Image: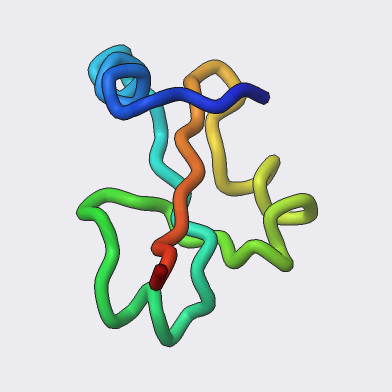
Length: 66
């Protein structure tokens, strides 16, 4: 796992990367990036293997209200 800046995210998505939104369901349902896979943070470990393609990069994000 590594952190990337916005240019890195764009490069990963251009190469077929997957977007994962880790927000709680009520926040995800209110607004999310189109095409994002929803896996709440508390479920990321048990659900990631079943929901994501391991041959593709993964961008994980959540909204921060700061």
